[in-house]
Length: 150
Image (tube, rainbow, N blue to C red; front, side, top):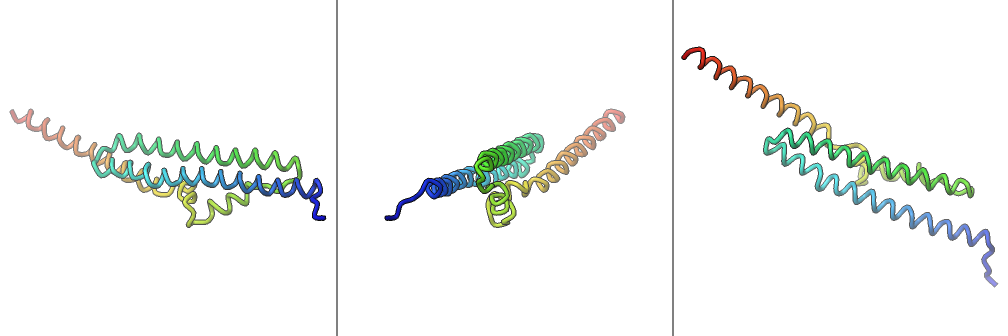
């Protein structure tokens, strides 16, 4: 008959488990990437458009913290998975997964790992804050001049 020996059964189980784990991990990091690109970055953009640069700066720091936590968690899960499976002579998932998701520029996770758009937002916030500060200085100078003339 077609009996499966213990090694073959373990190999099949390993393949199924690996596929389930990588699918779950992929879904979770993709959800984080979609939230980053669809919610967090547009929220900062809206604050910049309303010239609320201080709030935009705070929100941008929160965005970077969100990305950092998600990337570290993602990497740690891959490292722990790989460590566990190496002890059973399994194939590591880490490099394969990173190659597939981060380096593929069409993958939503690529934008998350690259912090795409953050540098542009940061520059706009800095320029906006500088402009507001300059306007305040100009206003203060005019008021001082008017007081002197009185």
